Image 1 (cartoon, helix red, strand yellow):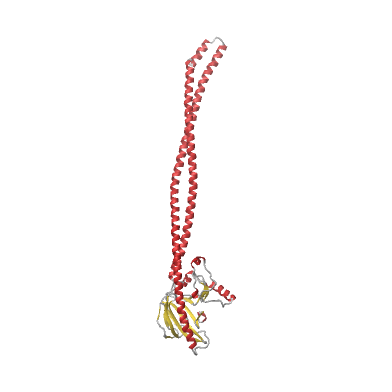
Image 2 (cartoon, one colour):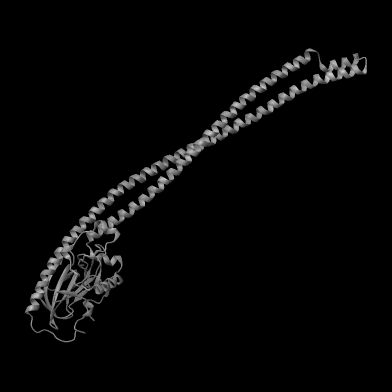
Length: 419
């Protein structure tokens, strides 16, 4: 677990900007730091930022759940809005196509009306032509059979001139009849063409009406999809609002727990400082090899300044995290006396082991997130003795030991003391 002090220079991520809460009560000012040194520490911190899964140790499980719900709600809302835009675009395209299909149907229907009108005109023309043919034939045959008349004329002709004149007259009569039949045939052919045009127009209208009917079903489906997409967006807007409110409440609760953790830390720090003032003697000499590692695990997150992954402020990770399985024994790094042991919502089960005066300074080892401890306040332990067992209590996402070294009550890099 890491407790980050807050500075005036917030660096908020976009995902948490709307929900960031001030936690000034936990602040450890960096006002005395040199700008150059601060810049170096910032660069160092950026290089030391680990994966998001490790960084989640910085907040309570309650906040992680709330933040996860908010992130999911934001993602789902973004996806739903994209689906709504796509559904609206499909509906808009379908409406354009619907207008085009309606125009084609109206055109086809108008062609059918025109073709039917032409057919009626053609039928009337055919009837008229038949009447004319009847009148013509009747008129011709009222004078007698043209063939017989021609033969009689041939017999009665007295000269070549009479014969020629009668032949020409006969040709006129026969030609008149032939033209009448030709006109009737032409009217019949034209009527057939118009009947074909009417049938083609009917077929086209049927095709257009069928397409329009099918498209109407598509339109209704798209309307339903668009309505469903809008309803989903409205629901997810409410979900996001509730998730954001939940995240804010979780942050507020975290702030209270951090404040309580800081209060208890300060109480222990006063005990340490008081002990340092009373202390006399102690160890003086090189510190190399003076301590042993508390657990055999590898370092998963080092001591140092960085940006808090959830709250966004610049602060100190006040210890070293060792990745160790739950239940692994935690050993005293040096001989000392237990001066405090308690449960914190933030640090879980924690223990302070005073190692006494080393080179004139009081040194204390702090164990956090333990499943439990074998020793209590006032117990004297020897170096290498098991004081407790690795766990994942407090603000922790997995089994590990968050180990700190305090020099005169101030956290320093434990790796400067450990082998």
